[in-house]
Amino acid sequence: MDLGLQGRRAVITGAGRGIGRAIAFALADAGVHVAFNYLRNRKAADETLEGLRSRGVEALAMKANVADEDALREMFAAVRERFGGLDLLVANAASGVERPAMEITGRHFRWTMDINAWGYLSAAQQAAALMENGGSIVAISSLGSVRALPYYTAVGASKAAIESLTRHLAAELGPRGIRVNALCPGVVDTDALQFFPNREELIAEAKSQTPLGRMLIPEDVASAVLFLASDLSAMVSGCTIVVDGGAHILG
Image (cartoon, rainbow, N blue to C red):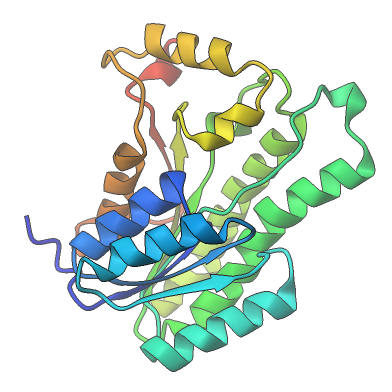
């Protein structure tokens, strides 16, 4: 199916691996030129870059911390120079401290909010300045934004902030033809889960309580991004869309 994305230009934060990489590859398969950042893992970023170029699109990889305003400005300046403008931002970069609420320190909380919430808002500001003909912004949230999950205090708060920011950005940027939405995936078994003390419990619950009968894979999230990037979602803005195989209706 031709989604009409050929030749469009995207920035994905945190696309070295996992969900971000799946989104990058899905966009490239649709003909989208992709720039992305990574924080530490250069080897994984090089693999993503090679995979993008093998799909015949322009690709750009940059090392940058999305919580660093100067680094983000340099990143989007490089995108302007390479692509000339922008059509899509996917705010996927995420980090956080997985501890009980009573063990969260100010440093833990600030780190998590700076990467996840401020990093999203700052990237949206930079991206919107390059979207001269309108565009789409998609943020990756999680069900922890509305549910109390073990060890998820700081990350859950940052994801709730992401969904609130999405609504405010959609209202402010809509008159400029920029749609803003969030995706709220269920449990996806990526490398990120290895940092959760209750990883096996999360996976077992996801497998047993998903009406559609299987866990999410990164490509499920990527498919939803394709929809929100395309003109098929021309009147979808300010929404948080749950992608979890129906698990949220049971829990």
